[in-house]
Length: 87
Image 1: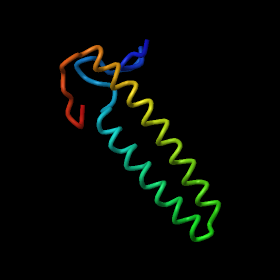
Image 2 (image 1 turned 90 degrees about the vertical axis):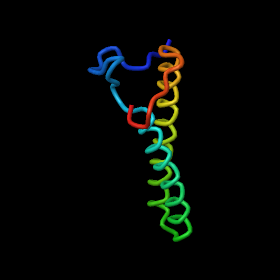
Image 3 (image 1 turned 45 degrees about the vertical axis):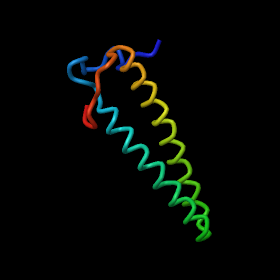
Image 4 (image 1 turned 90 degrees about the horizontal axis):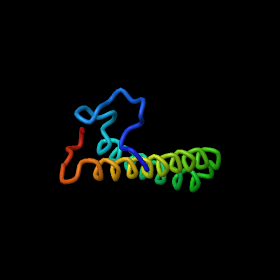
């Protein structure tokens, strides 16, 4: 079972370990930015830069998956509670 926060985290239910909604927005922005930069780098024939951007885009996708799992666990633990961008 996935928990909303790691067991040894300093955050509590009243004070979250990380702002998941904000992380979601930032990871989405990073994904879009890195995909655009990768396309531009490959078109400019800078393959090494394109590969680096693709790697960062993959990291953003993994981060998005982790964030979504933690948000789902938080919804299970706190049904009906709406969180702002910074919670």
